[in-house]
Image (cartoon, rainbow, N blue to C red; front, side):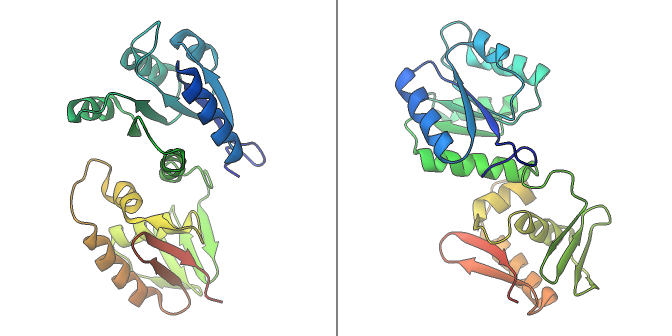
Length: 228
């Protein structure tokens, strides 16, 4: 279950004036383990704070969504995904330049939206906030020292290699897509081939050895598992 704390589900503010869409999102998010709060106006959105995550429609009856986004950023640090019918390249660029964590165009698949939310939470460290060290079997990651160890022995990694294995270790056993890795390690605004990820992962596998397994999920991405 998505969690913002030890036992608290992530509280998601859904700002959507289309009742049918809002209801469908509310039910889907509940099924996924989130705690949704649904509102249809900018005023109600501001009154619903604080929350852990925000899904924001730009076409609101009482205020332009872009204006509301700026106001939300002033009073909340919660990640924001813009969910809107405005789908031109200019609209997408404008939304991302505002500072949105992602931009989803209607109509959309709920499963895709939830996957994007999970990716944003992983990038924000929402799986294990504030943890300085993490272990997955023989693998130990020291985030403060920027060090990777296997069975207690330090492994020399490049900065990108460290970022990749650290990101995979945030959610061991779960499949992380190549695009998620690109966004997390190279940045959401970086454009290039995902093949470079395969090159870095291949180098990591040689360095980490058989005690740590980074599995390839064909056509999707990678997952970190404990082979023991």
